[in-house]
Image (cartoon, rainbow over all chains, first blue to last red):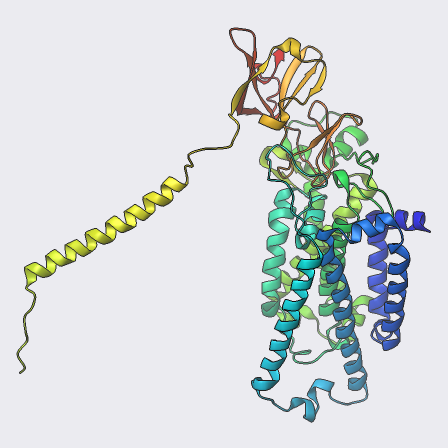
Length: 372
Length: 166
């Protein structure tokens, strides 16, 4: 059992499993948003944790001082996500019956004073939060290390826990992409959401069925591409940034075959049996062409098949209503939204390319520090 | 019309104004010079950028780590050539570790791997480790100059200063 978990927790498999679980929970959202699911999930994860904590490797990794906030994050993330889905599903059921959402009922629309209602709650939150931090700082030692040394790095060298998703992205990308461009686009994209998304539905109340596309695309980026990568980076990366299963001992000499090559080498040396051409653009033309095709053909497909609500996926997004996002959002907002979507999807694409064909870079121009 | 009491004449006003401005400028300048001085500490705990690494016969074939902790340089000797490799990962600037059993440098940050000669073969590192300028002084000792780097992808490893024949 532990060996099986060690094997399937490898991101090569677990990433696909997490995507499948994510899609399943979107499909069966009503079940996920039920109290029954909550108790099953709580009981299941409690039993798993108690069982797994008996293993000394598992125990060592979850009680490492650096990792305790991440365990807290995971528990609170799971709870808050489920609670929002629960409320959304509840409201969707009310809407189906023709009732207003729970937040829109007359007794819930009543206004209350900030003092004492809000300030009182805030004061208690502050007291409880302070007490929690005091207890935490007494119980666990700060994970301080020796003074910094420019010629030596700890192995593994881990970023602060909130950046471990970013560090995991950097395994698959050039630092200019995963360190500058993608984080920049994440921040700009999050800032842009209120300007791109002009749909008033869901304002002030929880819902899922009225905002299927918005919620599922955001949650994919958040849960699968950020939280899950933090989990990998925290619990499953050991010495030399190699993969180590949750029950595996961190053996620094574990042999991992991680050789990888560039697309230009696959094309010219492996397929055509020629040396790499001297001309950089000729050498990299396949990668450049694929990138351009991706950013040109995918928007066309999405516009024709999905975001005009015509194909199967499109009908699911908006319940078979007419029109489409291009019409309701306008040309500029629509193109920005599609480009942000496509950029987000480059992340899983690049990860799969690395795992299945050992691809290092699609476009490889170290001469200009430009690698995709 | 009410009489205005003249307590300060025009000439005095300008002299006060000058004193005020000069004081202000002196204070600001003093503060800035302190900040400027702060940028140049009395003692810098940084290794020198060039050093004498010993005689070529001191090194056996393979990777030598004796200068790594002080200067961040691996000396690699193979097939009659001796080079000085930088220990900074070309991906994001972490410090790789030399793993003698696996015969490779491995970066602890994102898993980039390099062969003993510095060529990258696994992980996200886009290019091989950089080499420093090496030469022999009059006594036949190796001089490593870290201010000059040679990059493989620019074809600079064949430059005569990028290696010494031993």
